[in-house]
Image 1 (cartoon, rainbow, N blue to C red):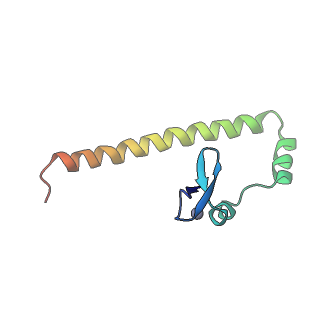
Image 2: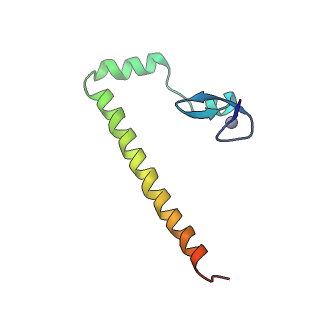
Length: 81
Ligand SMILES: [Zn+2]
């Protein structure tokens, strides 16, 4: 069993990440009824909006990671002490 991405407990696979029950409950995942409600309010744009948010999130993650990796690289390459 894989370790939870967020702590040291054993986790189960969720969309390619290992997560434990405790951390999963803290995600406050939407219930089926909540999702149905949002969907029925806007059947065309709700799925598009979710995809749009995922795309923004992925790009934001990469930008932030590049920025931090750049700092780390500079630290390794220079005589900062
Ligand atoms: Zn956990």
